[in-house]
Length: 321
Image (cartoon, rainbow, N blue to C red; front, top):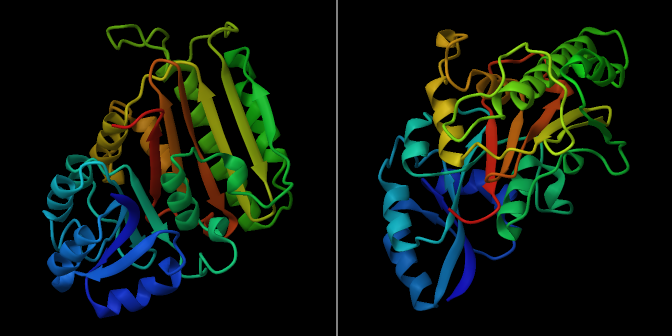
């Protein structure tokens, strides 16, 4: 069968909302309203096309039609799923997302029309492009062309404060918005580096090899790399470790378990990962099992003081599954 991209929306109103954002998606064979889904899927199969990517609106899933993804996955077991949520809509519950192994969730900004001229100019465009290509999101793709990407190879845990200071220094200005962005960036950098230094190194039994706060010299074979850049509007950063101990299922479980921010505690598993997700506008994680994990994302200046916004994620592995 030929590969295709399919979008499923609730009704004609949702179709009208999503059309400007999705009409230029390469390979898009249809934006199907739920009442027409069965007939349209039959026609799609008659044309011998199988969707490699199915875009699902939060208007139909997970709360309105909770069994939708399960049914579609039985029909198209090799399809990837992307859940898209308007920024004006509430964040959907993550437990169904875990159950149905959805690894891509994007909060759509109404401020852009993504596939007119520069499809990768928004997070929705980037996510669709990367899923279709089977590629990995990198922080440079969030930023304007020719923005400098700073790269630091960490050799000691005692370098953390110096690295954070370097990140803060690239966000200029003393107005409240810039100051809040610096504070947010410092918190994110701290959590990312803490995870790489103490959370990622694990023995075969899954037990951490180092205690949090322990002084560490990082051997060359371990490798911790921190990257960051600021283009005047977006602050992007990521940390790479050489362990690859996460999995998509564990990532989603950590996010769902801690989704109620009021209940988060020091003892909560995945607390650091959850904080990273909550403070980023969009988080990307790439896992090469047993070899590498990259955790990163972007923070927009205009949202620096709004901690209540919904957050998206993009979780990939080096192989399917």
